[in-house]
Length: 248
Ligand code: BV8
Image (tube, rainbow, N blue to C red):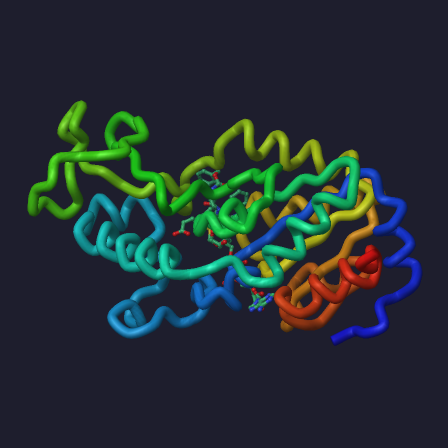
């Protein structure tokens, strides 16, 4: 791990007025939530997540897709925020403006205590009707898998953005706006492959922000950022925040 951190990066953090952060599945890896592209474990090893996370897959086999998300929901419910999530909460308290943009659907940033969260891809703990799009908090307990909407009888689905579906307009607009005004943009724990999220760090670079990537592996973004910090979010982030804002 890159210790000590470059002085210029530490100074930039200390003087930043607006920090924006994009996170991906990697920041939840140390909470025990498998990353999106890691081989799914056990029963799900035979499926490609990219194939399952689509409306076509849900129409073709609603039971399989519903059960995949039920398995993931259960796994996420047992997970706890890790030091990487908590370091972002600490960082948020140190700067005048902080924008946290996440591709993750696990809700761990919220459970860690982050405030300004933009969920680009929705949240696996919320459920909505596949037909009318309305959020549903409860439904009649039947043996139906997937269960049905109490309002229209349509099938229920997780409130996440599937491949081929548009991102929530407001969320994307706010995320793009933050790339234009932030002093520093972090890309943490993402393979930088999924669009349009992966275009956010590029927009920040074009707007003149200082850019930082935190990832144990190189990504298509690595050669474009100012600082590529090689390592896990759970160890690099706490060390970086402590270096820039030493405990009193
Ligand atoms: C859309 C929710 C308009 C569901 C997800 C250009 C423009 C627009 C669209 C496209 C485009 N080109 C292609 C498209 C289509 C598609 C796309 O991007 N395809 C890719 C694969 C080429 N995009 C879409 O369909 C988007 N829709 O743009 O609407 C539209 C409409 C119609 C037709 C066309 C366009 C919707 C995308 C959202 C899909 N939904 N999730 C669910 O979760 O089930 S995306 C999914 O991937 C997850 O949300 C995940 O967060 C996201 C990104 O993956 P990562 O987070 O990066 O995770 P990954 O496993 O890949 O990587 C983990 C990283 O962590 C690795 O780098 C690893 O090294 C690192 N790591 C591991 N351990 C650690 C760590 N890092 C730090 N610390 C550690 N300890």
